[in-house]
Each structure stands twice: as C-alpha cells, then as structure tokens.
Image (cartoon, rainbow, N blue to C red; front, side):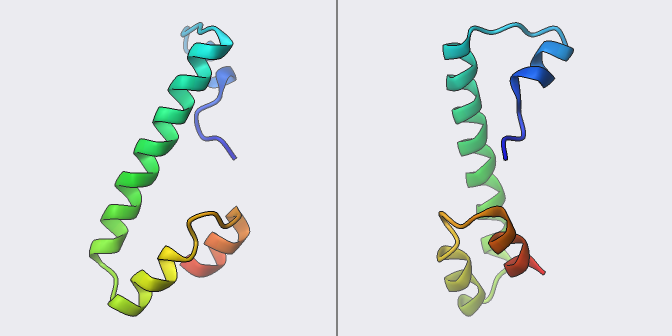
Length: 68
C-alpha cells in the first residue's frame, strides 16, 4: 500500500503529472524502505536479521506478522 499518494499531494496543494508523481513515489518508497530497514537491522540479532532479509518482497500481512 503506498504511503505517499497523489491524493495526499493534491490535498496539500502539490500538483504533479502522473509521470512526475510516479517518479516521486518510487523515490520516496525506496528511500523510506532503505532507511527504516537499515535502522531496524542495527537492532537485530543475526538470526532476526536473516529473517528480515527473507521479507524483501513479502506482502504487508507477512511483514506485520514478522514484526509482531
């Protein structure tokens, strides 16, 4: 599920073309994912980090289950 949607941007007065929005959304999601995963990884045991690595393309429900 995207966190940064075109509707959110429109609501705060940022109007982008579909292609500009797609580029921004991709960059936003990639950057957020890298930063969050890196911070989480610093706190994990090696076994937990291995489990996290297997979730790279998992769906939201699987990731939530792992986090719990």
